[in-house]
Image (cartoon, rainbow, N blue to C red; front, side, top):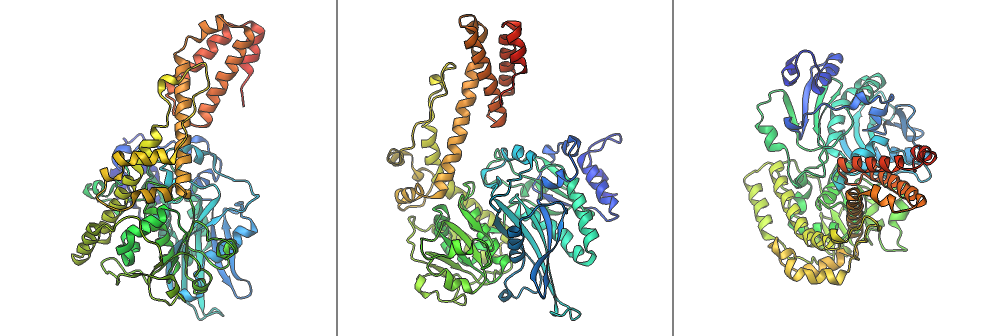
Length: 609
């Protein structure tokens, strides 16, 4: 087997790659390695299947279920298969999946089409997050953390002529339902399994799901080897400790590893330049609209174009998370259709991707509409669209353009436009153009967020104010005007060449859902840091000496409080050093042993909840 040489382990042991290749060989197919941003240095053996997981626990860490949606002449779209069969979906969720898994009839998608959708989990049902996933979530970048209220659907749709069928067409979608926003990864999985599934049907799907169930858990930062139907995928999920904007492309392409046949440098990113290509003259204005959480509609000819463009928009403010709702593909049958199209209130903070011409009329009261034509293959550039008045948008047949009356706060950066235009003239690959555009967005976002980070850090109490015998001190309040005064000396002008009304942009941002989400996240992190520092301060005290000067009742109260602190540190994943936790346990044991025997027995049994 050609892949044997990749394993570093000796003849008596099997590394994760050996096991993945063996699983691929069981299928009797040649093993191909598909790599997604990983380096040999972090190639550690995952304890995945050695954790004594139950059947389907491995599968649940990656997917909620797999659905097959077909077309029935009497019923219309219908879920034909759900696998594993015990997977739970409410009727409302099944209806949403049915309608979102097929392109609108006007899209005319012949052949194979891939796209993605996102839908709200039904209210009233238990939020069934895999217990291990919560643990791994804490190491993910904030923009890759799961939203417990939403599912993603990754679709591989096939529509081909078939005279043997009454309708004259074979129409079917294979859909992966997951909590994980790993767009590029799941589209790659579907490319590997969907074409053969359409030929071989259910037994093939069952075998593919069994392969997924044997995968190690999606641990951020580890190189994972994932076998599926004779193919071994090599994947690395980013961590919150990775430097923003770094990619593994350079390292991977320089490796003289002949066994890696396809390189996927990311699990979640889309081809940014391809999506922004028709509107790159206005990319900075679109960045502002996304940053401010403005209501945005993307009108596109097909679900693949609409979903890619919506995902590119939410991605452009990275490493900030887009905290509002977004729907890469939205239909008139969606359960939130009335909520999002009502004219009785202002449009909500949401980005919608639509293809049905009906939306041109239904959403014409929305303040910002991006109308795009067919996305051109890499290397071609469509005619640049113009910013137009909203009143000029009558139908979905209107010319491509950005329909808005929004006046950007910042002056347009002509440098990036020249750089991208030069790239197009020189036929620079789309991937390279995406790297340039992504770096530009990253620098713009960082220039904007650094002054906020600096000010928020100043709200943290001084370490000397933390007393082990008092509750941890509170963070100072965020005062918008106080923050605005800091911009004169330490504003974005220190890191960005872009001129304009930065103050106005900040004032608008402070009222947006993205600021609200960002600040809540930072406040939680800082509060947890204060709790961790308080724990460390407690550990440095001579607690045994303290108990000698206090009553038994006060000592018991201290023990119960310390036990609670330990549980809190574990439950909330507080940033506490392991030796601090050990010290605290030692303190607790020493205090309990100094108490009378009857109290010792009670306290040793007591575990706080």
